[in-house]
Length: 294
Image 1 (cartoon, rainbow, N blue to C red):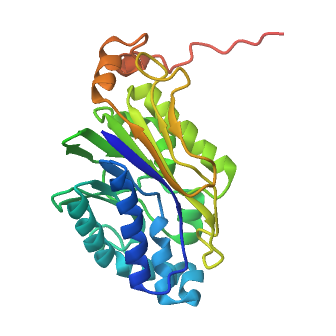
Image 2: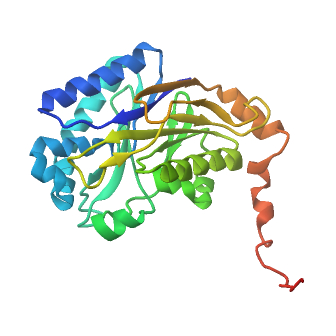
Image 3: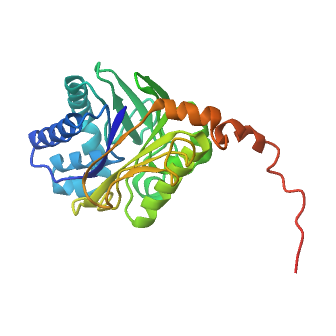
């Protein structure tokens, strides 16, 4: 399979048509390069808030509602594009009000298949900004998605920094990691997390990022990132674990070919077998003693 992962700049949109044209252009470009799966970043949908005007986009609370209100139309557009191009699309995640979960919004990614069907994945663990300033809350459970290219999972940004969330999805061949990070430190925290999950699960992780400045939003005002593909530094993969990476803060697609047979092979006969040996940690987390030396 060929995957395209985005370094995505958010724009101040003049109209819904401008958004539709932008998304169509991005999807058409990746599909034209032969990509089977397209990965957009966390909170890339915040640009939809600009359709309610600058004042709404700049207001933390109003921007949540402005984006959430547009998600049904955005989903319909993604479904049409996925079907028209015969691709899977992980849409940019968005704050979304789901009354069945909470009266506060969740951070929701939506995954579209070529047949028009859709799955959702909500972020599990909120950053300090999300929980303390923005009031975004944890959503529904982790899910796996069976596709014609194998089993995929989604860990949204901060979620990939937690190994037990990654372990819960150890049956995934590929983990998609949509991210939105303000500073270089945040980008590297998520990237290191994505690389660690690839090592532990002996799988491939795919990181997407928002990039650029948005003076119309307090939530996504500065963005640092790049697309990246990471695997275990083991049999059949690069010795660094880095399969492909974009140029930091340069918008556009980064592509990589992923062979599911290499994932199966490294899990069965790698130099090390991290995924298989995970449970041997059990019972070893109790410190027998603390001894003072020196």
